[in-house]
Image (cartoon, rainbow, N blue to C red; front, side):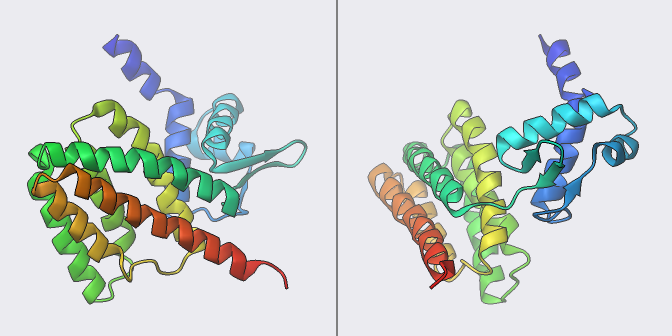
Amino acid sequence: MTGSQDSNQASPRATVADALRADILAGRLAPGDRLREVDLAERFGVSRIPVREALSQLQSEGFVTLVRYRGATVSAPSGSAARELVQIRRGLEVLAAQLAARNRGGAAAGELARAVELGRAADIQHAHDELPALTLRFHRLVAEASGNQQLQVMLEQILERVSWIFGQRLDTRTHTSWSDHAAIAQAILNGSPAQAGYLMDEHIARDEDLLTDLDTDSTPK
């Protein structure tokens, strides 16, 4: 079983998909950029078949748009898709926060507290380039602290996509984020599931409101 899994992870399709996803998440590939099969095949030293398979996988994840006869481009996140994704994330992260509080952070307790310290320091210093990665780290640690591996797997892809969407659609969203994170972390470390779940719910509801406000502001008058 392990050998099969390792082989699958090392497949040309997975290698191409992982590299392109990383480029998109890091901003090295921007919305609207063309993804030409022949160029990608040359870049990765593979045939066009695994490239085509990788692009199809990334389309299913929301990172790539495929149009017949026109090829592939990096997707531009839509407001409706972003809101739907944040709604899914909201339910999963509330559960993660509640479970994490029951564990009082478990083995991730120290790292969770440290992530909040680093995030608040970066926010105070206006180190905005560091904040997206620290925010993603905080939410990953809450999922880890839940102790539920299936929940971690489900949240991982969603958290990456949400981080990417906010990076594309909002210049700043940190005014209250790290105060929220600190309060959530404290509730988790104090072992207060109801409070941790409530605070996480309120925190992600604000993300939904930000997306709604953005779409309202960009609607033609």
